[in-house]
Length: 202
Image 1 (spheres, rainbow, N blue to C red):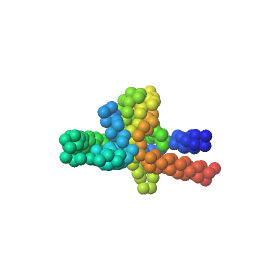
Image 2 (image 1 turned 90 degrees about the vertical axis):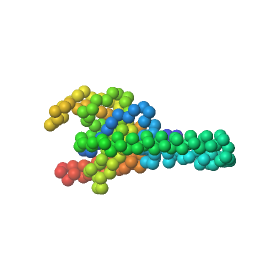
Image 3 (image 1 turned 135 degrees about the vertical axis):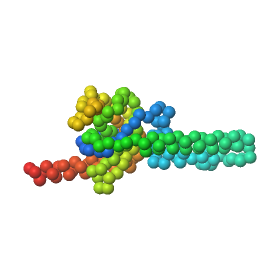
Image 4 (image 1 turned 180 degrees about the horizontal axis):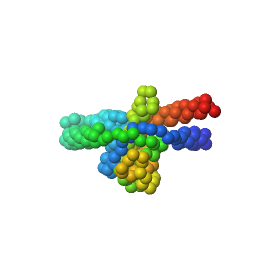
């Protein structure tokens, strides 16, 4: 019962949100890339390091290995090929992220999700990679996340923009735990600063 109350409190804490100006970037994530990218973001190290080799997995399970056995040689060769494929996929994902441009936007941010304006049209339920740079922090910090589009507003034309933008509401489905905590600390700090400013003006 106490655990449920603790979980509820943590969930309520992660839902605390605020409006702020961030540098953001985003792109759709194809289905075949979601699991690998999510694992890479959560562990900040990639799926290869998180999984380990077949030999280390077998050793951890207490299984003895005969390196000269034909079955083991075939498994070892397959393990090497998988490492190459995973490395290639991670390189492709990094290239996509590095090639994506960031823009300044007024967003609504919390530890569990973000609402942001986008000139790129997405459908509800689609999966996105989202990069966020918190320039209002000292020092500034960057967070990457995988998110699911939960809400879409009607198109609105932003001031100074020629192309209409859409408000996208997305829930984080994969985010590093420390990054999520850093967002929460940032939100609470900004809220305290706003409260102090209001009390001085009152």
